[in-house]
Length: 311
Image 1 (cartoon, helix red, strand yellow):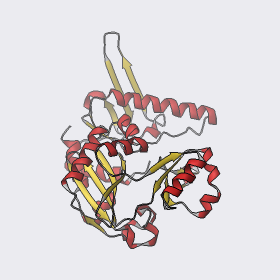
Image 2 (cartoon, rainbow, N blue to C red; image 1 turned 120 degrees about the vertical axis):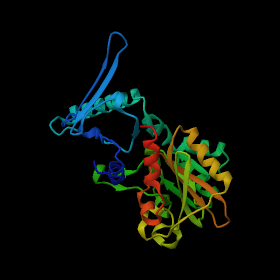
Image 3 (cartoon, rainbow, N blue to C red; image 1 turned 180 degrees about the vertical axis):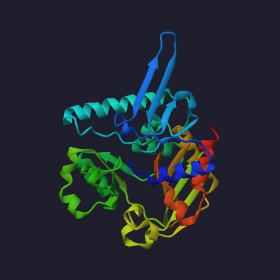
Image 4 (cartoon, one colour; image 1 turned 60 degrees about the horizontal axis):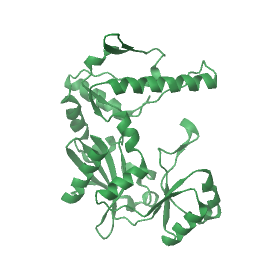
């Protein structure tokens, strides 16, 4: 599994002299092993064994949970491989739930926090302005929404949004066009998330790590490709700058993480030309290494401090 963020953190912890183990769930059975035993007198012991040696439950102080993959076994039939993958996922997640350690973040908390409808509801309750939003597979409701927004509507996915498996292309936030309108009946096949298109002065990526917050401006409007979705452009070419949030917005960001039982999160906001802050979403496993590279914020150090403080 390729994960540059995990690579950087592993090297960073190694330089600090912190003992860290990197476990890849996709290696389970090839050749890693997992065991979890419940004894007749209330005993509970688990262990993982692989190239890193043997890891036991009582040795774990903190865990950074990234974006693990569970691989299909090519030696099995498609049906058998799918069954084995599902069982492996349940076993690993079950073991993780037993682990009395500090998590960034707990897998179950991540799964809940990834829900876009839940994010919007909590953001509203906390006082954020959120875009006028419609989740539907009803073409009639979509047409009504499109007219309410005077034709300025974007479509966004509710997941990571890849088509075609590992070789597929990402699905970016996009403006609804005349082509989409000609084919709008297709939304019957799967509910779609639509929002009013809000003009931006800049995008904001707010990285929250424990009790520290790092707001960054992304000047997405400087390049045509990144106007609607800054990820679509060449991110390294976009101007980035540290940003000072109003105390109220900062407090809302921290409270959003607490509401979702997260200690780490990457929040996306819009700053409008009129100076208003608009909530878009929170990613509980959001990327951040490029920000440190471009404007030298101590994100790796801050996260490493948080992990090390619980070892």
